[in-house]
Length: 608
Image (tube, rainbow, N blue to C red):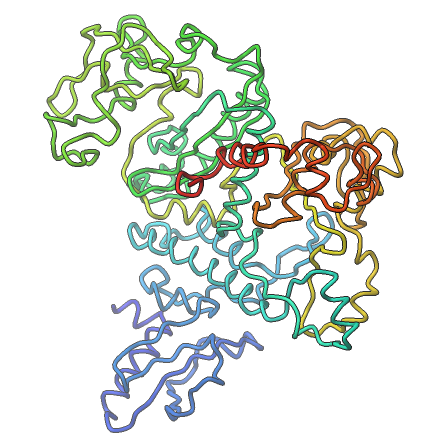
């Protein structure tokens, strides 16, 4: 406390405010810290002991939303904005004993010229916090030695970054609307010129990492891979292990620290090893030639960050027999004499903890049964059940390991593979809340998809969506260059321009051509790429749009909407009629195809 009183100007200011309020109980007062920083020297350490009192009814709706107000009238302390330079200093005085200023929106880059030149001249909040949590041998380590308080700091930093991003979306929301092109044309015909009367507000976009639309887009991308390559061949779970030697080496920089004290070390090493493993699978073909791969990162209460990985293999590399499965997956304890490293890895990390009648209080137990279905039955050999799932070989070899004074045999082994960075990569470990925070602060991907999936939009004639601002003049908007050009209409133009393009369906175009969004046209790829096209989903209740999408799955090379509806030389009145003429709706095929498509991504209640 003496150190804070001597060196921390913020702590002294609040102590002075407390003393003044105690001495003047009959005078309601509020201490206000202004968030604006027009002149940095204006906010340097005060030279005199001074308190400014403001009348309480001066605060209202018109007040700056980023101010902090310390009130004695209601007994509560209002929280300071995360954009205030003193936010973290006030929240964590023990981590910043000298009252060092934190993030504000005017911190310039040290060098922003040449190859390092960016469109921005100042740091973002995420970049600032990433800088603060890195160890540097020539800097103090008070923050990094904070233990549990440092973990809270990491989580608070991430929430501050997320709140700033959400605030940006929220504050810019009134400026943006989305509407159909023909509706804008109708409005201009009626004489409307104000964009405020049209369209609907844009909500949290799919580009916002972690948003519902973001997750759905990635989910639909993975389903596009399933439609292209069939069901995945391998499902791999890759977990972080805080006992990795690389983590221990980084922890040695500050003696006495444990892995849970430095969540950023675990996250960074995990990401490096995950990248290395995906390189081994996708490039070095350790399981055979890989056609596609997809993973998502999860953070659960009872585990470190882990990746769920789907791998699609070439026909020649697929596991077609039980012997093929045994070559890559094992569910037995190795013999210590034959494989001492494998024995140690499996017994340390790949044994399910005791449960069932021997440990009814285990965390995996629910209503007297293990939620993971351990212990598994013994099986003399690997088989494939009627649903196509592998039942792994678990022989009664009498080979056991003792955990919590209970002998465990092959029935408790979690299936593993010895090729993937050794089995030590897997560890059932306790929950570390800051891991997701640092993962997101480092802007590490939470999804991986290879080959890439291109989202292909489509629309009825003059029914494409356009983005407009409240302040835009509608007649001028309709004269905007390329306002009518879309990915879909330019597909027609591509078919007019290049004869070879007419040999492909719409979903096959991304493999041969790349969409140049800036200039709104399809450009021939220099070399063919294994890119997957995904036509955006459309509900059957959408009517004409649904039938248009159905028709796009079979038709090749149309050069106009009229030609798209032409079947056997006859121009159909609607896309539904075109589907009938093509034989897509002569029976229950329409609904069978809809259910067949939905079964690859929809849940049971959604299908019902």
